[in-house]
Image (cartoon, rainbow, N blue to C red):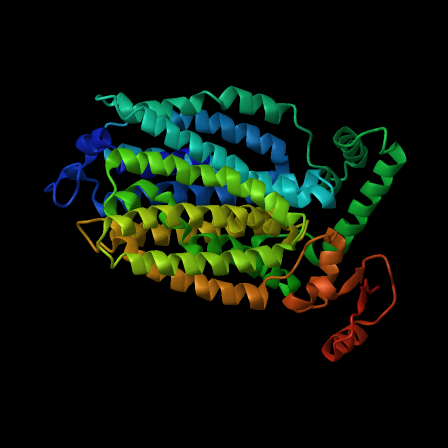
Length: 492
């Protein structure tokens, strides 16, 4: 639902009827529609949902721990149903900004609750695929919104921009029903001492022909063991605990992983219609190309599943970011070339950029933040990671409209040079700080972080969370010598 609305708002900046209703007149030499939405209002509309999202993220970190992901999700869906009314019947840009802020609150809850829940209800082997599926859901919403906005182009009344908002009510009831019949997170049940319910949930999530009640008891025992290990360090946790001891490193990584989605230049994709129009493409063709552009969210996510089965998360994130940096530099260079061929090449490269993003950074991000964060602090650390994303989104929401608006900086395709440099810096960060989490249980990851294993050594270091040998000093000294050590849990 968030992916749908984010692209709807951005697409309206190129829709003639919306521009006539809320825009300011400019010469046709400046805008082919004769109207533009001022950059400051574009920033307000884009940042309104981000501001509301931060509130939702903070609320989710507390509410999901207390009431559980399922109840919080149901309440968020009900709240969003009411807030959509404000957007549908808005008669000014100010009302639309208010609607974005209000809708941003439940969206903020959806952003992290879904990822954390997905990582807690599936086995290690499927964890990467299910968390990456979150990106596919975004893609479905984004592609649907671009199709709806294009379909409403011929409408000459205010319903050309009201209808895309109205359609959001269509899936409220199905989503509510799906969440209602979904099981509680077994990890949340364990953290709240409801072990029998956790066993029942695990049995519900597995095939009884291959997974017995005894297996469920053993799985819950492992969860209890992992939870107790983290309890020693995280009893009575608060947001401040996310920045203490080994959790500080984990929080930094998940915050950067999410923020790097925007630092990669992905924000240009979100402004696809306006970006293509500033490059010289006609309104109708820009909306058509925008549908192709947004279809990459789905195609790229499917490609990411294939990559996840072969390569590690760190590898995919590193090469994906590096590739995006190269493509952005090429787009920026073509901004200095004034020819029809250059214009269409920019459009093709923007589509390629979105494919690379959704085959790597987009879905793998959700996998990483669900795995890097500790289970006991997951809701809070994932919420903080999304807050970092929203802060970066607000920053981009201020500068990107100015980069593209013909009445302000008017960089157009040349803005690719700026984001290419940003992506290059992110590539260096990934190499130095992002660990490999593929195939690791949460207990093993706890031990690796506890022993301060370097990011590039995660994939080669053995970890046994149930062993009680090997002192910490021995592990560290062997690591320095290049030996492949086996890290064990230390009894205190």
